[in-house]
Length: 210
Image 1 (tube, helix red, strand yellow):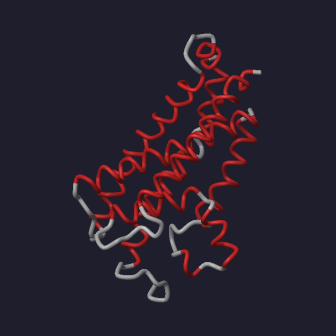
Image 2: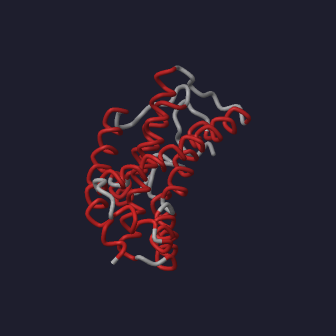
């Protein structure tokens, strides 16, 4: 792996944040299948007749996905320690990793919910989910740096939310790692994208039962 320029990090150290981001993506992107099951069981009908604000219902599901992402982060940290990867354990770094994992999980879960609201069937959703996961993962900086990508792929990677999840985790998680865009910018992009998706999902969510 010496042909891949990873700076002062070994390739395992470079890839560890990408593995965590992959875990977040792959679990959250299929979050919508549970929403379709809830629709089929009549649970969503009961939620929608309650006085709860629709955005609050979607936000609750996003927070649920975020908490699930934290459990995956713990497992990845344990595996990284077993492999001898030098991790940062300062309180600020751990809080930053937890926040980005929750935000990334919430973002992709909300995106998944939007897809579920549009397709409305489990079969279509699973097909679309499988089509989306690999392009999102490989068109990011999870397993190789942006600098070695062809120009067109760099453009795609810069509009891919997963790129900013990995970038922040690389600056916060690994000793000697750094964020290409800046951790603050990574959080700003993720938060902005999440707000947009949350707004769309809140509008589409009631239509899931029609």
